[in-house]
Length: 440
Image (cartoon, rainbow, N blue to C red):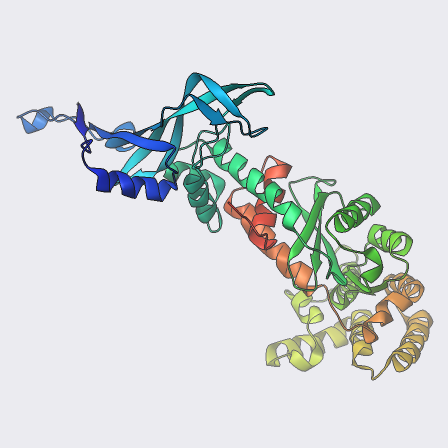
């Protein structure tokens, strides 16, 4: 049932004034009428004849309000391009989605004067909406307010719009905030990569500054991404020469890029990734020595050994201590590798850089004298990268900032069940974690 009911009378100036104030309209525009169309389900007198509440019935809109706005009739208007007075040759009607009015979905039916100016044909701008879009600025604010905590699909479903509209609003507002982005104070960066989708090459480089905000995201995880970041930094008032510290994982591509493009900066390998690589070698030794396919003796199986070998000995409880005693009796090579791994972790407990260098030299000799082949290979690699590892004593920073941001990015991706468009994924991450100054 479609019941059309005038919501306002033409003599109700106070209500019209309230609408004009909310839409921030000047004296050039006037509200002509406001009416609501009700869509109410019909029920028969017999209860059995009532329609069933299907899924489509529940989604039906119970009412829709239309506000008609027309320009004040004038012969000439100021041209938005050159500012000269130009005559009107056509009134173009625009339908704009607006915030709900009186609890119902609302649409603005606006008449836009089209001018025939000497510089061309131009439309008079409507103050409540951007040009060539089908929604108002207040509606954009509502969409962005929802996107701070919700996904694009859920926001579009709640507001009754297509998800492409929400994506367009997000991309436009994020891109329009870039000119106001000030990166002149960036003096330290954290570099990390995050996976956009399944696949070997589907990675995105994420760069954060000392204030723990995302300042750049780009596809890839190599030197090309760092070059794009430096161009982005220069375009927004930053200077690569001011960057004194770079924190990153042990990626060879990032190391080469920083050495080539930021030779004056101090590259610090994250201590977490350094110790993590040692734990990965420890796990390979466990699999090689404790696999039943490689065993020639009938030793009993020891489950959950991996968790014990990853723990520091000082943090073990009684259960893990008992398991460690069994490992020392049954698998002396694994126990020796564990002692070497624990000894290496004490590298960061040294008092200064010189003491740490001497400590690593003694540990390196021990490993090459009687250590397993996995640790020998890792020790050679660490000896080549020792300066980057020991840079932590000069600049005690870690990549925990980038890892925490990476965790929030992955939660954002998981909430949306993945993204099929890389641009939308980057726009959402910059909107939530980039601290952009979005103006309307």
